[in-house]
Amino acid sequence: FSLIDANKFLDKQFIISASEVNQLLIDKQITLEELLFALLQPVSGLAIPPISNFYVGAIGVGDSGNIYIGVNMEFPDVPLNFSIHAEQFVVVNAFLHGEQAIKKLAVNAAPCGHCRQFLSELNGCDDIMFWFGKTREPKYLRDYLPERFGPEDLGCTDLLLKSIPPQKLSFTHEANDILEIRSNDFIFQSAVEAALGLAKRSYAPYTKSYAGAAVISLRRQFGAGAVIESAAYNPTLSPIHTAIIDLKIRYHSSIKGSDDNNSSNSLMKEPMTQAADTFQQNSTSSSDSCCLTKSNMFRNRNNATLDLSEICEIVLLELRDAPVKYSSVARALQATSMPNVVVTTLFLE
Image (cartoon, rainbow, N blue to C red; front, side):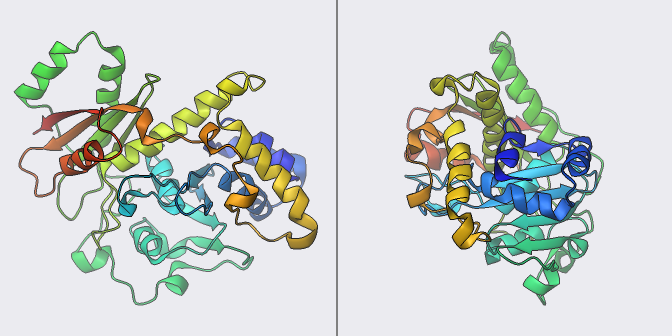
């Protein structure tokens, strides 16, 4: 199974169905672990790290057998804590697709402490098999985060990805008035509907601050997300973060689904091709090296990124009386990299 095969296989998707995975294993006569390691290089080529120039790719295998892809994303002109880590991306990807557990996780670099803490929220986290960097021997979270502080310390039993009943949330009268005014805006209405569905599935066991969000791009695409809390609080992902991840997934799919012969419609093509070229050039000298740097990736980063300037509206759904509000995240973006973005808040009850 060559890197060129991997490049083509990932061409239009951030999720690979169990049936596709099984058929590929049969056709290529490889193991699942071999597939994961083969995919890491092209996956890392989809990352957006304009600040660190450190490209991270992560691949998770769900209980369903589906494969979920994740990459790190960094955003100039905003605080570093707005960055999205590849391991977080994988978890959000699985969450958005209704996965109930992650069984295996491969990453091309060792996880930071932030991600190790975030992963401890997962349903069945102690059973997940991890492969990081060059290590081919699987390890477990207890190896990477011993004597950890986690959900059990705060009495949480409904863990992340575990199937639990959705919250009963509805819009306030004021929110319904806004929705009525924009009733003819199909994209806005679709984005709000998706955000409400995810808000009801919020993972907010510590504060009960259930919230959802949608981000709408200049291309009239949208991404929707929900808050995902952490027992340690700081690794928490706001609903705006998770909506941006969803937009990245949709953006990649739409770009790669267009005519690949037209460079203006193939913004994500170059890094994948370069990842394959780079791997082939370096395979004889460092075949087990996974990390890509600025020198061997993205010769034209402007043709490979989805940046915050492409977002024209943030729609935030949150409880009026919640102890934690995420409107401050939206205001911070308005004040820095997105001065022209419209922020619409719809309160829930």
